[in-house]
Amino acid sequence: PMFSIPGKQAVSITDRAATHIAKLMAKDGHQGLRIGVKKGGCAGMEYTMEYVDVADPNDETVEQDGARVMIAPMAQMFLFGTEIDYET
Image (tube, rainbow, N blue to C red):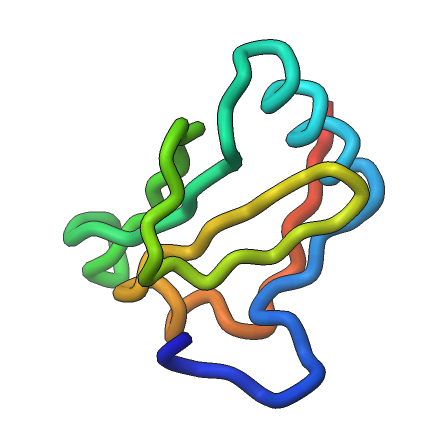
């Protein structure tokens, strides 16, 4: 990983988010949710999210309660320390 603190995950995932991500992964057989960034938005960057079937070896992977979130290398410095939650 490009940015890391030993013993600390790049992002945290709430129980609610982990449950929802794991459910969608199982439903369609995906390997995980990949989060990235692209140019755009007010601050010059916007987040991208997609379910993927193949993990990129350069991604930072965070797993919790059956949910797998993969962070693209270019997104790691923007997302480090972020909490991922899910609301309906």
